[in-house]
Length: 289
Image (cartoon, rainbow, N blue to C red; front, side):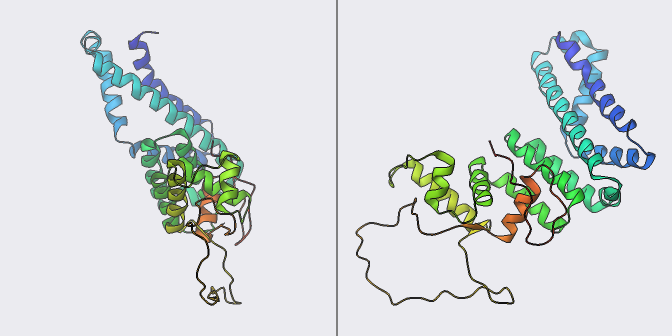
């Protein structure tokens, strides 16, 4: 297929999005899906430039063909636009499975604001995995209300901030609550444990430290009847007999998700979470791989 044919498909992609909305029923649902599509499209700055450039290509075909850099730019964004269409289509399909009760929610300005922020993040995401987490959040936020939209915006920031390796650690702690650092390493990377002074050990310590300081994971704590954390009883201090420091892969201290970390998993690592009560778990999260 020629460069011109590739670029001329741009309008067809937009028309395809519109056609998928038009087949929705009833009419209120079509209007809502159109509003969501417009919120998504308006939040991505390059879309207007692609449409304008594609129109120029049609009217000045010979001139654009001479500009190889511009042509390649259009082709790259054409692929991104087709990816956006596929993403919107998957969201619309999931909305249909949630039923009519979500319509007031997804038509609200609060939700549309979340959609705009999410698609800006989707466009800038470094990997397809991060894009999937963002789309899971948007879909689940339509049918699940276990935390506020302010917290959901924080979760979008987490997706941008953390690396896929962080998400693997989060997923492992969710699937098997209470693992030690050794358990997490073995579950993700296998039984071969690196030396404590290796680059791999430094990276692993950083992952655990980032998630602990970020309020995503913590060590288990006892609480009283009001949910207040009890202070740990400090035993008499003894001089350590060990001549070495604690290993990054130590096997005595357990880790769990914080309540905020648990909510993050519900919204981003499950395909479609149920409407959950506080403290309940959905199905295990999808593999971060």
